[in-house]
Length: 480
Length: 95
Image 1: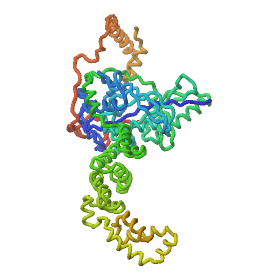
Image 2 (image 1 turned 45 degrees about the vertical axis):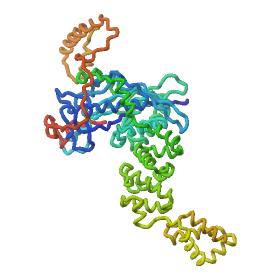
Image 3 (image 1 turned 90 degrees about the horizontal axis):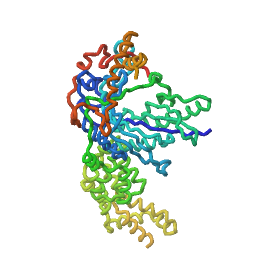
């Protein structure tokens, strides 16, 4: 029998706020354990949580960028369960009436066909603390609890079971990742857990109208692992069914070392979270005005920007895709064009020299030592014939190192291109006189020697001779 | 609706409470009385009324995203029954 995998994803997006969702403690990563805590996030009795407004603003932006409806009146609810990393014995989340509902993302399947993946909901919630095992200096071989992460703001983005393969799941996930990082509401760091994913996977016979029993896979913290975990799980479920067994609804943990999933027995017992509205947090009412204001503040999203680069600036689809791979890179490119650089040239240099130099030195585009305006100035010097494209690369290296303007480097080092035909002519005359043998070869029909002469002239002029003038003069002299 | 000791046991397990057989009987009767009382509300016509989640008619209480000092590690751990360095120490948790 043939089987159809069915996949839905729950993505946790850690928001880039300075403080936690319900208290003023810092969310900075890497602080000493438990140093960023207060009565609210420690879950001490009598502490009152107060909602961080920025979390709401970020959630609205995420919702609008994923075609969701923003819920006019939403509530926070308590999700009750016991776990050592959850100090209050409940997590503040949203249950009924989450802030965003009924959205979708259109993904490109196999690079061509568009497929709509529905988003059920996006809700706001607090993160739990962190448990550490086996690295404690304290008593026994217990676990340690660090509550710095407790109360960190998260969005949970829940998709409908519309995905049909591990590849589709990865494309959807990458698109969502691109949107939240582009919006600047998440740093997207998957290793540190800022963007993490649980996958609900089931299989059913092809043509069946009933979904199979699903397993929820946790702990998949890279795009590669998402693919691996889903593929392993599909295989496991099909094998199980074909051997006459049945899939059990359970939570499974992905093990990146073996590429397999295993049952989390501790979570097998049925959960009854007893959700109820949190009396400490008043209803959240979002007016149409607020939504419209957010909509106006949204940056142009990568897909829109690609289309504009192609239509208005004449870039190819490939160039537009590369340049919009991050918002910072796209901003750099646009700033270069705005400063008067030719779009095609700025695009080539941004994807070429700039990207290469950034990679070599391990610097991010945000910290690029050559500002986009400086790049535009350099390209103008090529356009007006002051320097050649070859010399420009030398000037660029110097700009990168010293931070000087291209004009000052060209002047200081005497790199101005020589277009004066008299000066070039005398160089050519000397070279032709000194290489009579090759001149004869050329005139005898061996035209390849032409490149040899160009090389000599450029060398003699220390790269400063205007190549088109050199070509023209050389040709007329050799023919003559 | 009649509350049984099985219902009490279920709720007690979720709350990690250990009850004696006598307590289970006692609480089943008390919970039954409370739920029976609340049951009366079902007779009220609530058509078109938003479910009341909060007793006080208030909405949108926010704070700005500005860092305020935390209470510090020592205070945070002061009530911990056990600590291990900067961590709260708990029995080993195995996933």
